[in-house]
Image 1 (cartoon, rainbow, N blue to C red):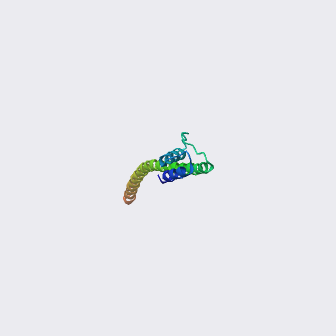
Image 2 (cartoon, one colour):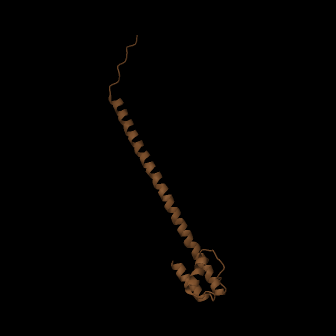
Image 3 (cartoon, rainbow, N blue to C red):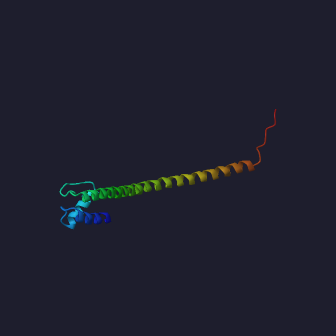
Length: 118
């Protein structure tokens, strides 16, 4: 919103065809979004250079928003995978514990008697 507000003021000040602040905001929005409807276009060198800055800032903000949404989606999936892994790790620990108990019982028990050879 700050970029659009400052862009609107900048275009209102620099572009002769942006007669009102709302025209400046509209030009800032269409420029930052790289839409460029063509109803108002930068016509002076200063407003064209300013539009380059607005486009770059708009692309940066759009990239940040896209990256944030992607990170949220990945985080949800990562949490599900992490939960499954932790559950499987708990199952493996329980199985190892049971195997150790079985091994301890077998080694602690006296050996079975041998039949004498015939």
